[in-house]
Length: 193
Image (cartoon, rainbow, N blue to C red; front, side, top):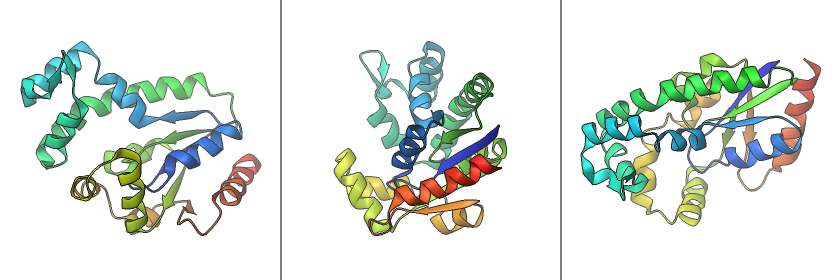
């Protein structure tokens, strides 16, 4: 089984690419979705409240917007959050991979694959790219976020060029080049390995 990771910066379209692989029959692990689930864990909530205070809570649950406002403006706060969440996601991912070991390949979608060091868990890495202004426009539309909030989040990600250097495959999602043929080409290569 080939372990494939898809990454790309905020607004690049990595989730769309992951969906196409899923339609093609590949199991997809969405790291961001799984990380959000861990934010509902009692022990995680306790540790985060100890670190950030009760202002991150709403009705006893983590208010993700309040948490994001803290961690995306403070690198040390982000590191603290990641030290709690990343080991949980990594353990969950390994269990998930073993459950899907009979597949030709599996796909892991992660915004911060390289930043978290998770890239070491994978055989192939696909980087989804797009122009920064295109990404910003997409995220404003999708999340109704301010440009400043988006730029703050982007500052915590590696530059796109650095990710491209480490990629096995690059998918351009600039709105001009068709994405599906690019995915199909990679899919064929993975099936033939």
